[in-house]
Length: 359
Image 1 (cartoon, rainbow, N blue to C red):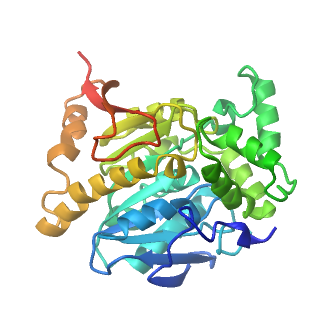
Image 2: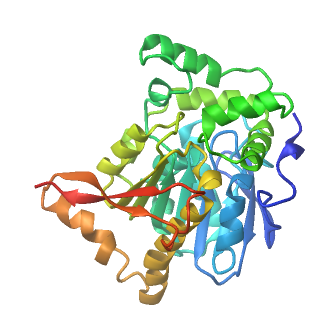
Image 3: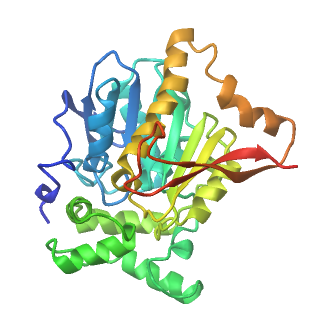
């Protein structure tokens, strides 16, 4: 399957980068990376998910590059990064560390946003020294740390061994996806997006996913089937926001809630009513807004104070309670409307949940 089926024009096509580069990972894997925006602006690193590419982040790149240095890269075997025989969570962490080392100055900190397998990449790297050197804050979108196949709802059957087995066979299929036909769009929309997704959005998503070579799709599905990164969640010590769609069939909200509850510095869990798994596509304004909030609060603060205040203030609220040994839960506190600074979520409201001390 040609990789040229990704969107090349319109609102879902990525803008031209200011710079393109090849990053070599620890095991020799070569990664396509690109940099957008002013070179001296606060940095943001975008990590896409399974079967996607940098094209997934087109809206965020276009928005944030006006006043941020946006760094995006294709995971090995995806987009313009060649396939490599090694596919593992350790390789994902190696690749992220290599990109951070290649694009950021020593000690420079960035907001790192990961969607789906990109979020799992962040969890895999959370205890790595280079990740900790460069991560100021994190956004986890539509992701989980374990039991992905068991919890997935792409097969409309009751949870159990039968559904888990069938889900693994479907997601891990070696069959080619073929051209983007009306039937292919309907299937992809059901599996990955909310029911209200606009046709142009579904078309863009299909072109991105169908551009992924089936060998890479199969190889990484096996890694996701065995995924267990639960130990990486408490190691993610920087302020972290979590976003999930309430209709996500690939990583249902049960994953986001578990991750948020285990994070040392969770700044909020946002559940988006009616949205599916492709949150950067389905809620572009909200995702950009969350990244911008994290950059304004933590990256600019780090730059202004040379690191003196990056672990204090709002970002340390959860830490203070955890240190005291309190129990934390998540409760709905507000609804995002059209007037919210993050912007509308394509007609849907957003339920923003934050850690609150249990009475």
